[in-house]
Image (tube, rainbow, N blue to C red):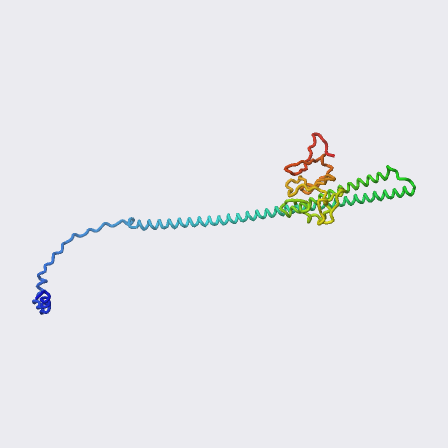
Length: 313
């Protein structure tokens, strides 16, 4: 028989019963080891109260310090924010004041310009009145001359070669020349006024030529001097050309920064219009004023009187 067969037979064999009181006998024969006695553990000494609470107190102090620091920083931040808002409002107020000041300056300049235009207009009206008076005097002189000739013809007396006729002729010629000179000054004032109006609409810069301010001039007839016999005035701006102007325009694309710079000049009478709109009579040139060239511009300059000299005639 082999091992497997033997093992099968043993498994099939019945189990023998256990002897009686086997369990009690085994328990009685078991000897347990005795428990070793241990010495009592001594109690530790009591920890001081401060040492026990020190970590908690330290944490609480640090926590409160952080809260106080955060509160202080928050307060400073709010103050800085308030100051920043105040400064911003102040800057806006300053900017508004600057704008108001600039607007005030523009209004003041406009008022001054308007006042100057009113003065120029009043001077033009005065010149027109003087021209009308001179024309009336010329007509009166012509009337007196006609009456004198009629009286001489009624008395059958020949008119003397040098007498009343010559006197009236000289008076008439002088009056006509004076009227033409005044009217020429009037033309230069209107040219100066038109140039300033044109500059007011073009960044305070004068026009490049006389034709550019045709809208500001009432008529092209203003550009011909009454004493210029070689030129005729154009009837309108469409017919205007270089042969229809007597005056020289001397400050193209300029400004009134230097008011003594010549703006226009009459070659017939020598009158000059300045960049500030005023007109200087040609009779005073060489006596009280002279013209010099400075930075490419013709400038009217007063003549220094010698020491001890009296007033100009």
